[in-house]
Image 1: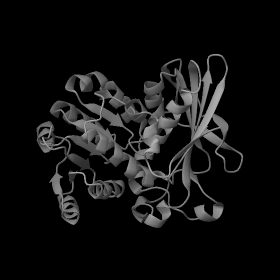
Image 2: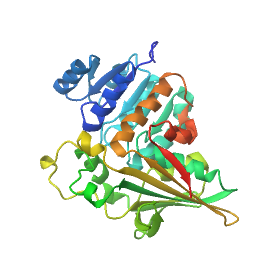
Image 3: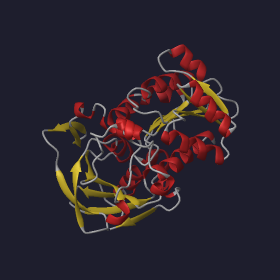
Image 4: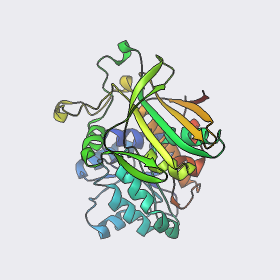
Length: 342
């Protein structure tokens, strides 16, 4: 680990990676930008005036050497199924903290499985330091605290809360996010947590949730990382996650024709929301909602904020969720984020 705290952003030349690297530099962090394409990584390092490192992830010795004098790795290189595991392995081996911005369920499960190794190495492993899962993890923990002996949790995510006029023609996703969200998704099925165990459903469930916009809206169950993080943070044995219907990923589009991601103006449009519903053993129910800037806006702020805290020595060794490490207030540390009890 570095004598002077240093952050390495892997995948820094991607759409989200550039946003994160630029914000980390503006925040005064000592950063290194990294990735696999030497020309692009070097150019970005020169633009930001920071060190750049180019390396692939298929050689453990090269990978460990690439983490020399690094305190925290922030992995922003999706699809994470190709990048997270080797970077986790190398980080634990090198005594370096590992963070990523994944929304892929299997990566959360992989991170959770490294808990004992990370504890022994004295480092923290945290997946989902962006919009998924910082707001949902925070609202789950906040709402669970309002109920005595909570036994079930339902989370509902609304990616974009905007008027029809605002949403018309809006590009919500980067190319990388689309690939990360759709590659191999059919292999998972629809997962829920029941009495502590992860269970595959025969078909998706639907439910209605009120996000405070147009009355109750239909949502569809989805296999999200909250099945891992919220269980770790709250201990609630039964968890379901839903995503508001009507905003599907553009799976069938030709990615080569799409822009890298939303423009700066598009990132400012609308809000993102998560509703949490927690039921206690006595049948009591608590509901709360978190209202945040939209995904990429939130992610560039939350990932750097969490990295900043770890660099400053605020961390708990082992696998952690955002709220297990920093409490539900971690989401409120992001500008223009509010929690409301319903």
